Length: 159
Image 1 (cartoon, rainbow, N blue to C red):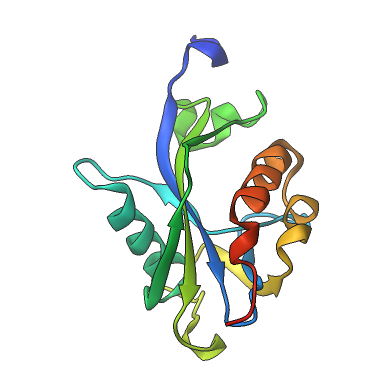
Image 2: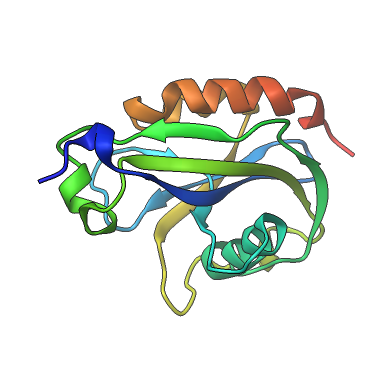
């Protein structure tokens, strides 16, 4: 059996979605009983570029891709899964994710969001202030969310 350090990272994307008030979309995973919230994220398919993957994942998870790209993170972000989760996530093939992160603004209003998609991942959603992001996520992603909040904080303003 491979040790976690020998496993590769899954290539993925993450999306910070802002509304017109400058608040950030977070949702609770349908398979979680805890109060852990997250921003939309997902894998990059073979041959898919990160921006296309981000838009596809938004459509699959949030029900809309009617968004405006505001920024792409200056670097890729990496997080490691806790050792106990590795066998339970992604078939035990990855130690965590290496992600391209994007900031988008929702073009429509709340009615354009539909988490009850063909393959729903979320049970509920809400808008929060960007500074709250590290407080609502699972502990192993807190540092990542704090870095993202810092990188995209200038975008968290009403339009």
